Image (cartoon, rainbow, N blue to C red; front, side, top):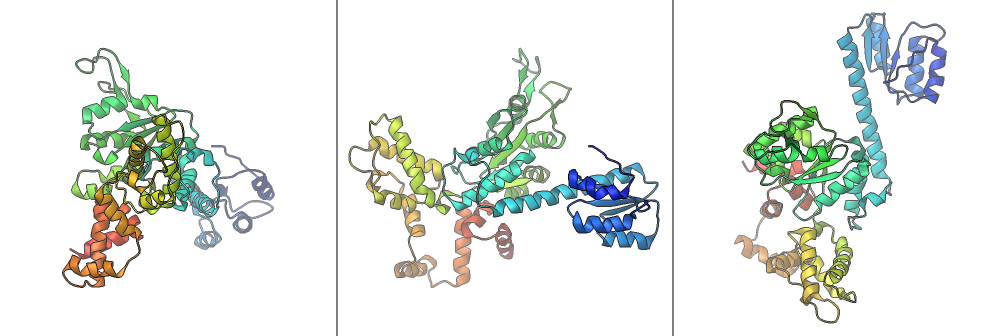
Length: 439
């Protein structure tokens, strides 16, 4: 950190005009312009620059005056080293967070992406996804851990890859699915091992953390990580260091960690299978990807892309035309597997297609998928209102319908409160309050 010292208080404003300053440490007793007068000027004209008072004046009224004028701290000489370092550190952290919030607000309020090429691999015209991209552009350069949450098949790995590109780092993007890895496999895969660390370790092996140096390590299905491995991951996030298997010498990691899950980690914390301290380390920034049924405007774009892709896969000489009714049919389907399931359905349809435009009859969609899609995709009719009575055994109250609605949303989200809240258009806190009221 560069430190500049000005002995003439008249030069302060000129210096601030020509330099980027993170913090001003201001003495009150200076020639020409007093510290209190200068503090008034800084608070009025340079309010974005934090100011702390460093003076020999131990006067309560003066201290109160300075704090009212905007000083963030008041240090009386001589100052203990720890007290001084703590003051500077806290002010810089607070200032950085405020700048990040302001920058995020400005970025989210703007209409365009600064670097749309980062997201070229993700086909979408959804405003919700556009908002997700804008958030990613803002937080990606921070190098802090990001938790991606979303249902199976929504494209969590594609989003992680976009975050990697938006980070503009030189290292690789390395993917590890931690589901099914026991602690030994997890340690060896990520951290590597020393020669002779175990039977069969005939030579040393660098882990994937080493391969992701200066880049990004993406850990998918983080909710399934073994408890013993969670401790090692926590240390990695806290200290940026790890131990290869069989080694007593730690290595330093320069990889940025991104994790993803389709589970509600809060539920796992309550159940005792996921560490709370690890969760707080992982969700510094959180990206929630909406399911395909909440962005039906993407169906047409994705359908056309997957049809063309399947035609190339099956070496069809001409691209198959898509019947207008086909997209409407797919929009009414409830794809539990999201984009991945839609791709599979279209691949199968193209493989079986013989002639003419591809219509609704060409899609081999499960009965349950179609039934749910028809119910969710069509307006409420008199017949559907009448079905409430058969469903409940009586005409239900609004409260009963809400409770049933909540249960189905949780079931569709596999118990994930965040995703269920997205389905219902409410906050996660609302979900928790409603569940707590049942107890």
